[in-house]
Length: 204
Image (cartoon, rainbow, N blue to C red; front, side, top):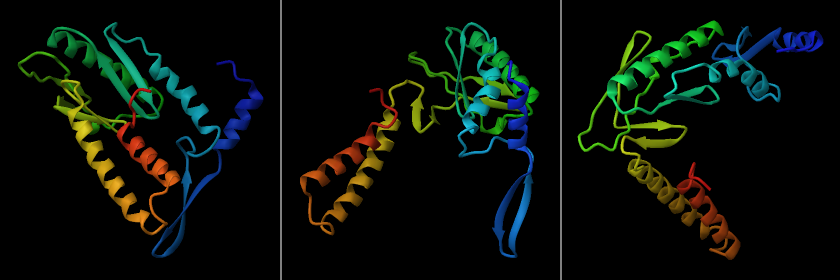
């Protein structure tokens, strides 16, 4: 990547002699941290992106799009035949797992989820291979807080966020009488909080 030696030495020092201190019933304990990017640091996201760029830049089948958010990876495959989708998906999953392994990382195959989105009247399913696990598609998955269903109608997501917004609205309503009633500024706050729940991840 053409990183100057002095910067590499600084980063090496940044990763050395890291100790995690935590509390137990017997008192404070320490644990030597030898792997992972420090969370909450300014440099952390930059180092993570530099490493993870290898995964997002993989040469995958033309029908496959890879998307990453932090350590979550999604593979989107667009094709007409189930056999072609399965072949592309299995190939892409194998390439991603191998690239992660070369970086000293590994997928939690049991947490892999598959969603087969289709407009066909007869619902279908597909089973993909992730490591030693066979993963069968499900009607709905939750990705980055959004419930995505196999018809892309988002009915379940709307139901979930509507119930959550109702709970939040009820809690805020109960507070109004304790803080002098629903004045204009408090109504605006009330509306913005409820809107943020309802419109989470919605395009703006």
